[in-house]
Image (cartoon, rainbow, N blue to C red; front, side):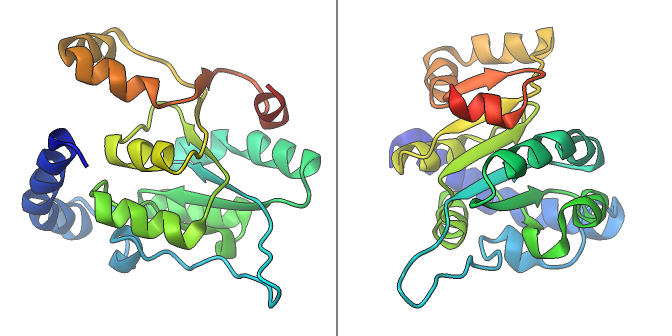
Length: 196
């Protein structure tokens, strides 16, 4: 782990308690199940012979992203029926929508972006492929996926002028961070993405 990730982890450790309490009890954006945000989503099952089907992890932050993900999930499931699909969200309302469309057993809360929480979640979900809806890209998650050689793509992304300025201001760090994302696609179905 390099110095930038250590600094991020320190910042997260200091900021998470008030951040979570605000969003849970005042803003009302977060639901219960804090343990999932701490990196403990329900683990994927493994057969007695050790086999587990390949897994797509799709992150759909809230209601809009969950709705936008519907054709992607359907397209991927139709093209790859042997794959396990898991969908993470950030907000309580996003979870309600995701559970309605994808099934409660597939949905969990995305972990906070501290390295130990991210790695714990990756250990439990064991994805082979990750899709981040729009530009919901977190540095520790992307770095941990890259370290495990898990492809990460951004679907339906739009980089605003404001975001572009921020990445430019980050200099070499911003460039290295974005280079960890395999590719970004807009308005493509997942079978097309996966076949590229």
